[in-house]
Image 1 (cartoon, rainbow, N blue to C red):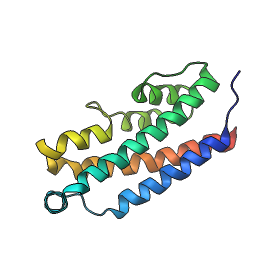
Image 2: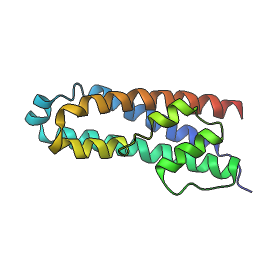
Image 3: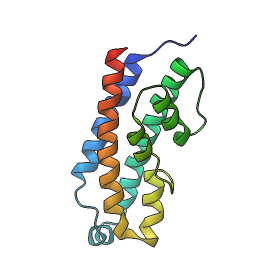
Length: 142
């Protein structure tokens, strides 16, 4: 039986919090800034991918420990995290946009709809801040 690794969860939460701060410090992600700084959108997309990867690792670990199952994808891991009591349903939905993970949405929007990126990033920042809060609360109660 796998035991809960609180230290690994906390380490990943620290990195999530730092990455969220980096996203916030990147400033506005409007069309003019994306046009002026071509690497800006790519950097934003990468930070969002890191957040998704970290959350997937936490969710998968908790799902294995609590539910005895290992979700195969990031999207499935948020549903498993909700089922395990790690996060609430509203957050699980916010972290699994219908059209794909936040980083993929940014990647697709860079060419097709750059005006949508600012909203995607703002939503991701709020969701991952809440994710870190809920996960820390759950972990401290274990």
